[in-house]
Length: 392
Image 1 (cartoon, rainbow, N blue to C red):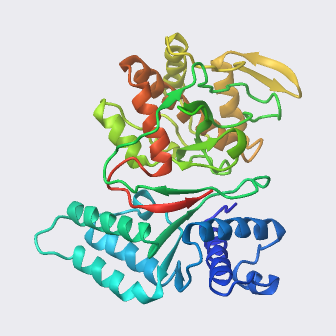
Image 2: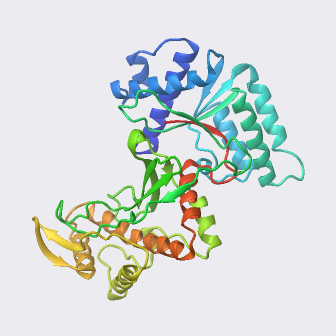
Image 3: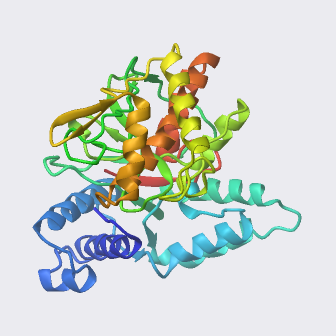
């Protein structure tokens, strides 16, 4: 899948072009045509695009006559309306649609209606957003305007799944999400699988839906090559849908929940006053993390730290959190591995997230927290989220 915005744009435009050809022309575009749109197109992407196209066709039936938009057309028009009149600052937090299909004969009507609904004198941006979402639900249901969010499709999954999101104006009909006891894990073993590195930078946990489906979550820096980076929380189903990410949990959803209980989301490692730049560690910085580890170790909420020890060349050379901390500082300062600093700072932020889990557990709010994580990843945590069709 994509690793940056440029690659993402190519892949999504590949979906747009492939869909247009299959639905409107009833033919699969040639390899040459596809590589002009997406230079990374290969047999793997061909299979993915086929599954996406079949999923859309199953939803719209035999209908044709659509215009397919990403970088121009109806999609940027809607994005501009949402930002200008509806108070949307980050599009994906409102609606994660990647491409948009619009009935050509209805395009002028839809655009005109959207303009009218969001440009009424005296209306607030929140009211405009409510009207925009309500209208987009209506035209999505009528298969006139279809915003599509494209997720990874597991290679061995024969057909893609389709789900309409945010089709209700309230929070009814919610799935019950439970935390799987004793699943919170922050492995602090350093260098066992590879010298100078934590196995991963993640704080991991598992959730379960009322139907029994399991979901793995992780909070970590998703770009270890950066010494100090933001930590995000991401959810991925296990079992038959393994690899098909639900997505990264919206910070808006996290912040709203945490603020209600007097808690604060940990800052980015680059802005954390307890995580100095590489080579600038002082005892006061170290003591903060030592104290936090001791606090978490005493917590009644179970946190699995694994083997808190240091290995080099498969030999155990130290144990205890303070030794892990000191060696991590040494490794990142001497640049033993380009990922050492990124994984290290990710683990430290993971410790603060573990403290938040412990505090939520103490407040008896675990069920609500798990729902926030689940619906925050699905971008369905508020009636202000826009409707879309997800293919995964």
